[in-house]
Length: 291
Image (tube, rainbow, N blue to C red):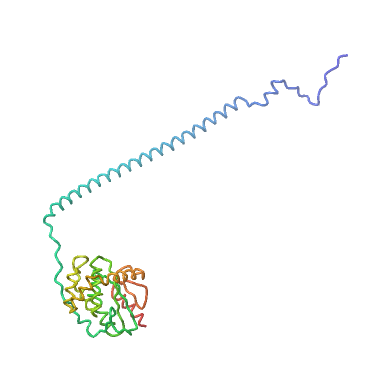
């Protein structure tokens, strides 16, 4: 007898081979939807990037325009400057033949030494050597501020503090402005040899005419020595021989080593060097040191 096929525990019919394989593939509609979505997203990204690049290109074009405008302005400015320089050169050339020669300094004059009368002095120190306050001033004989201080402010300090025995005042060289500064400082040292440093010091500032304008030529330095009653031959030998050249140069280096950066500068009882903008600045230091 023919045997019937056995049925499994389910009533589902077995799948055919084509049905078995279709389980591993997406439906066509789903694939089309995915591809369409990818296309839309890609297009959106492309458009956004295209807009960004377009905006960047516009910004760069604007920057190029600004740079071109600046370059044009600079070129016009340069052209204007060249034209002005040409005009100035023409003016200078036209005036060269008529330009006046520099005026010589005025005649050397004897200084007023009455302010030194009765004030003790030894070498470069002016005032009572036992005075409780020691003021050091660094100066250059060609320094305009030094000349102004010497002529306008120092007489007040001299009368109020030095002549009364409260301050001993010492001058130190910082000759840096030019050759005439060095020669003037050397000349003052030559006068110091004859015991007349302060007379010559006052005389130099009394004949101040500006920096490197011939005011302290050797001839004028010797003439001042004669007006002050120095031994002319001894003074000339000292100055011409450069007897104090090294000393003046060493004094400059010592001032720099001490921290002096301008003239006139001051030190009170060994304080660090300082400058002043008015006399009260110095007076305050002296009063503080006086206790």
